[in-house]
Image (cartoon, rainbow, N blue to C red; front, side, top):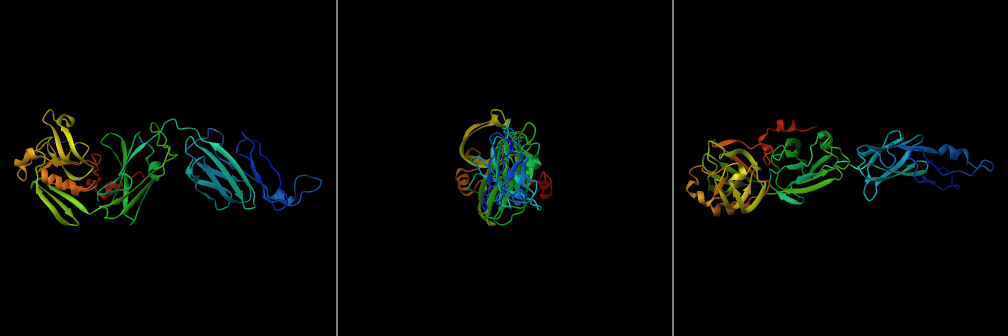
Amino acid sequence: MIAAPRSVRRTAPLGRPVRLALIAGTAVLGTALTACSGAAAPDSGKGSAAAQASEARISVNLRGSQAAPGTPVRVTLDSGKLKTVTVSAKGGEALTGRISADGRTWTSDRPAAPGTAYGVEAKNTAGGSAEAGFTTAAADKVNKLTLAPGKNTTVGIAQPLSIVFDNPVKDKAAVEKALKVSTSNNTEGSWGWLQDYSGKDRVDWRPKEYWKSGTKVTLDADLNGIDSGPSGGWFVRDYRTTFTIGADQVVKVDLDRHRLALKRDGKTVMDVPMSAGTPGGEKASWRGTAVLMAKEGTINMRSETVGLGDAYDKMVDSSMRLTWSGMYAHAAPWNAAYFGVANHSSGCVGMSDANAAALYQQVRVGDPFEITGADAKGTVAEGNGYGAWNVSWSDWQAKSAL
């Protein structure tokens, strides 16, 4: 059964650094940096030659109240060397960045986010400082996402990182560059772009092989300020999730032998009779590796939701979702005559109440169901649940935008 201004310049008394303030409304361009000065010349009022020599000016590439987002912030000194630059979002964190080898320019590591007010403070090596500010234009359209698995969860060895986007993503390379996966054991893996069963753009990160039990995984999706492209919109926040890989267990489904086995650490802990989908048509089961997407418990399954007319309408226990198209493993006591004998269901893997309940208690989201046999209608597609394991490693790597 199947069921996201004008600048101001002055000198200070001897030995005192000067902080220059900008008159409200002035542009960032032309802010003066003034160092500690010597005594002022009695007849000039302009400070000593040494003080004038230490003066410098900076420019910031973004300015005003409608600055373009999506661009890194760049602060440039016309002479001398920068010591530090701080660019902070109002009410948020500072942007990290780097000073160039010649000490003249600081560039942020990340772009300015839309609809954000930033403050800029620059200091030079002579002791001078200056402050400025700008605000970026608000996003005309916002892109959001749905992220799996959930934060601080424990999942099975086949669970990918999966991101489904609300709106289309044209600039996939820019988005993928902002997605950083770290693991506790340097697991090799790759992002791959695909179309979700819903029709939306999706990107998954899967390891080359199944995860090792106990691996800790973190995703930092530093997307704030990234433009996903025409019709997609801007991302206006970052995302982060962490999860841990649980026990090394695999469910083996043999369509030809009509058996289901649960293996943990290579040892068989369950081996029970079952009946899968009736071969020869749409009621047949999928083969390949399907990943347990959800443990849904007791649910109503209706045949019309999967295009099978009015064949059934039942409350079904111990329901474990394997694909978006509606393939489950579940209790199917009405089909008991076929367990271990023949495949005679509407596409799902059915077991007795007791066996289904026992399996339900032991498996976790992310466990692989490896389905083999001739009595199938095809292989689980990569977007129909988590079917990436049915793609070769080289072909999966080729799906990366980078």
